[in-house]
Amino acid sequence: MKIAVICANGKQGKLIVKEAIARNASVTAVVRGENHSAAVNVIKKDLFDLTIDDLEGFDVVIDAFGAWTEETLPLHSTSLKHLCDLVSGKEIRLLVVGGAGSLYVNKEHTMQVMDGANFPEMSKPLAFHMGKALDELRTRTDVKWTYISPAGDFQAEGAKTGKYILGGEELTLNAKGESVISYADYAVAMVDEALNGNHIQQRISVVSQ
Image (cartoon, rainbow, N blue to C red; front, side, top):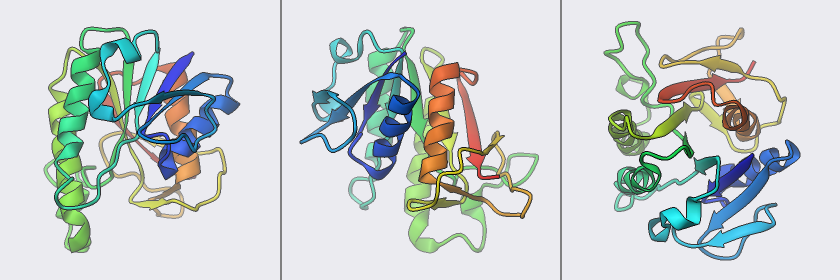
């Protein structure tokens, strides 16, 4: 299994690289500057400068891109479109590190986490733009994509348990009534999907046990 991890220097990207290597995958880090991940193979390029020649030969491309400032939030859409255009019509699967704000909180799928009264105001712009990128991704029937949303409480420094509950479009709670997962356990779920390819053209979600 040959996997490319885009934005491999980020906190989530590093953990995905580490987890994939531990599962004996051949991993290539895609980074703009020096590589700080555990990957030996490196493509040193900006995401927007990637071409299909760079990605040809990979089984899976994992998009761990993240933008956080007001002026860069639209890049969630434009970066994902660029990657989709590159792998359009190819056998290469595109897995996306998603957000939790767009998960639904009712069976009718008319209310999302970001619509809740208690959703932090400062997080709404990010949730909106990530949700918009997901909506656009859903239209790409020409791409073998999978979008993986974390739990509501996404803990960068959380412990790795190696266990998680797989959910779908709706916010899923664990036995404790919590919506929480560590970056490390999210990486386990991401690599599971990369290796197994069970949810093509679907959004799935994960929460810790």
